[in-house]
Image (tube, rainbow, N blue to C red; front, side):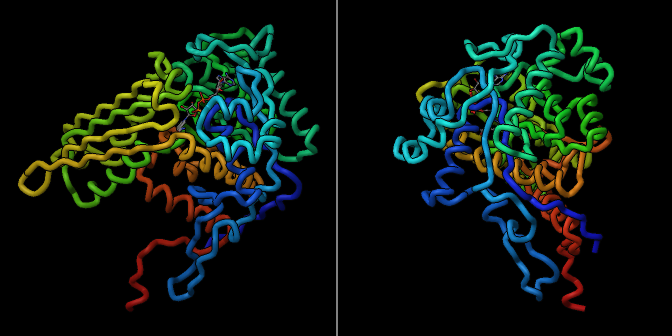
Length: 437
Ligand SMILES: NC(=O)c1ccc[n+]([C@@H]2O[C@H](COP(=O)([O-])OP(=O)(O)OC[C@H]3O[C@@H](n4cnc5c(N)ncnc54)[C@H](O)[C@@H]3O)[C@@H](O)[C@H]2O)c1
């Protein structure tokens, strides 16, 4: 049993700040308001519905996660953010077309109150948006200072002591860490000279971490996952996590692949294709943003199957991911997976998955869980990379010397054991021999 951490009480309200108030962000906010009014259940949310086993199976101690660790109540959440368009959350939600009129009208007033600050926007990073609601600044340093001011004024206006940030903005052009990102000193110099290597997503992350606001990245854009911002998070003792919400096709991939691996079934190829028609899809219709998403989606199989250890099963996998913008579908994404596997004596078999998903319906509860878990981490004195939140991401952040865990079940165990460790409970190993000895 580890020693329980001291967890500060969750007094007062918690601000949830979102760069990008489009389909995901507004579906999250509307959902919380509807749930508060008793119109719906928080389906898909581990913090609200999940349970956690404690101690031995003979003890029958299985509380709800939210009874085990102290979270803010949904009534205590206050929403804000930034967007490249001036629409309040109601108009943005109508435009996103995810929720039915009947649902939106039931929380119309609450949504109308949520208005975005102007965005830090640069069309070099998101090409397909005719942005109209943007900040003007001299240097990128000034842009970061303006975001910092927004955070402070949001907290002050709403009487908040605590806030978290979850990035829900459009996917930016693909970028890899480079010189300007390698140390905090280099990053700050790059801010001063407005180096084109610094993206808007990094500015929001930098400002949040500077303000002591825990940060999670729901987009595949490069942001807090650069050494400079991890250094800042460690220095300022701020929790960070990312990136790219694991929702539809990749969620299924990280459920099925561990199953094949567990039974030592071989894999020859995995062909994944998607059609989606929302604004996210429109942004991804640009080659540079598409690359960020494809890289994020492609990364998961290698670490789950570990081909070096089993070249006879996974040494020659053809993994293809396609994303196609198809407007008639709106937010209702359709994903097809064709999985070519082989079994005993190399005999071939196929698995087909056709997931008729709803993108933002899958992502919204993740925003809620991340907001509550990040705030818990902060109150429990945890800082820097929160690898235990890998459960929610396609490309989990880890220390550079560690490979990421992408297997959903390992991620779940990591998350729940972290909660047990925070509370000083025994970790669960599932050994079970002691019951029989
Ligand atoms: N829905 C899912 O299942 C899912 C899963 C994984 C990741 N994501 C990611 O979440 C993000 C949001 O998805 P969505 O469906 O809500 O997209 P969306 O297009 O509906 O919303 C994104 C919003 O971000 C705004 N924006 C763009 N650049 C900005 C900037 N620099 N600052 C502030 N706002 C900015 C846009 O104006 C838009 O309103 C995307 O990056 C997407 O790839 C979504």
